[in-house]
Amino acid sequence: MRTVTIAAAVATLVSGIAGAGSGTAVAETGASAPGPIYVFNLYETEEGRADRRPANLVASEFSSLSELTWKKWGPYAAVGTGKLSGTWCMPGCQEEPYTATILLGGTRTVNGKRYFTRFGITGDFPKPEEHVDTLIGNLPKPKQADRAEQNDRAEQNDRAEQNDRAEQGSRAEEDGRTDRADRADRTDRADRAEQGGRAEHAGRGARAEGADQGGRADRADRAEQGGRAEHAGRAEQGGRGDRVERAEQGGRGERADRVERGHRWR
Image 1: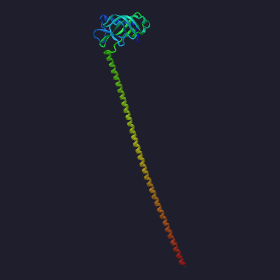
Image 2: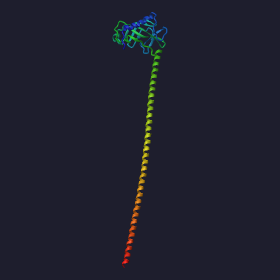
Image 3: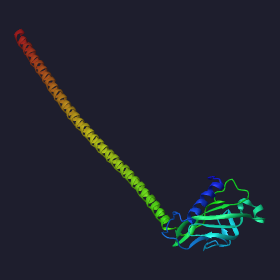
């Protein structure tokens, strides 16, 4: 948490109030001319209310003042004195609240009304080391933000939405690329499978053709061998017949010779 000396912080706020009282222009958001000015007070109400010169004021969730009397109220600053208590100084300040001076500034228009939005508390009492939102800080404001804050929020929402759309577009583009890559991969695998199938069919056809040619060659060889065997058989049979015929002719000649010699002998 940011730590600033209470003296320096209050001095800055006081200089702004003094400048406003002397007629020096003080920067103000949302209002072009002074008018009624309020403080948004959460004293005894959770919803808060627009108060002017309240007797009791909740400055923050850590500090509140009671029995306030206002020396100055508007148009750009307010100064009051009262009894200070809060969670940061309990239990001592709860039984005996500190006497303190509160300064209001930082006027701003919210929901059509001008409010003090900054506070600083000073006095002769022990100061906490961390006094942001205890002795100096931002006053509560109505729930509905002013136009500037609404514009800021709308702009932030637009930027977030644009970033979301850009991120979704990038994701969609990446998904598209992945999908296209998957499709290309599937097409490539299908082409390879088809080529493989064609090669397999071609191989089967070649094997079948080779087998057919082999069968034809085998049958031709067998036929040729059969023809040769048949020729050999015929030749062998012819040889046998020739020998038989010769033997028979020889036998006939021999018998004729014997008969002829017999006649001669007689």
